[in-house]
Length: 327
Picture 1 (cartoon, rainbow, N blue to C red):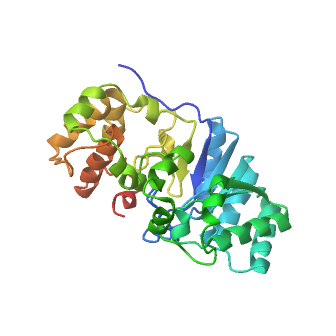
Picture 2 (spheres, rainbow, N blue to C red):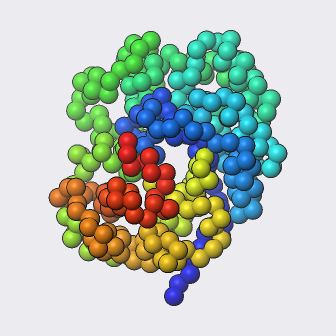
């Protein structure tokens, strides 16, 4: 029997929290105000960075949720990175935390002294629904004043946002009304968005649908290409290793380097050996009833199956955090 293991980590990040000021329509991890305000503690940070170094990654990014919702916690995470010799590539932020120039500069200077060099500042039509763009511009100005590098993601949306009042939030429907009904579909051509989490619901209406039978017939292979991909892994505040971009699926960090067999990992092991076909068989045996007649992809079907399993309290060790399935 083929042995499936994760032996090397290439590139990834830490999820410090799932709590967020926004409930963005494209969020892969279903972050939002309804998620717990838990934050990665020092002990978990050290364990994460040590594991990351042990498995070969020299640097990571930090994201959330919104990492700046707990400045002291973020400072601790950055200190732990320095302590363990892992470089922080950047910290992601939606800028919702900005209050005034003085407090923003004071916080950025403190974080810079502890090892922060770059902020990835989100520039997104989806963030505009809950964050006035003036806050984004003010954070960029504070970065310039304190010598923090800026990684604007994505600056191609500047020209779109210039059409609106920057001092207030704007529903996405306002943008659709201004730019036309094809605006949402056009975003997918301008902005890399993984079809998982909340993005499935957002973009499902514009994709062709397939029956379960068709999806299973077209996807008879293993999902190892996704689950064993470490080019964009994440480890969260609970010590969950999230394989690839498969949000809602996780392993504890001590599983890295060990065989991922179906007896220990019924969900992940089945996906590694038999793909979505095997997981569907397992779910049907557990009483799975599809919530829709058709799906846009195997990942769409997989998410529906896993939601059923969590609601029925099955295989919860691998389907963490369960909050992903309830928001």
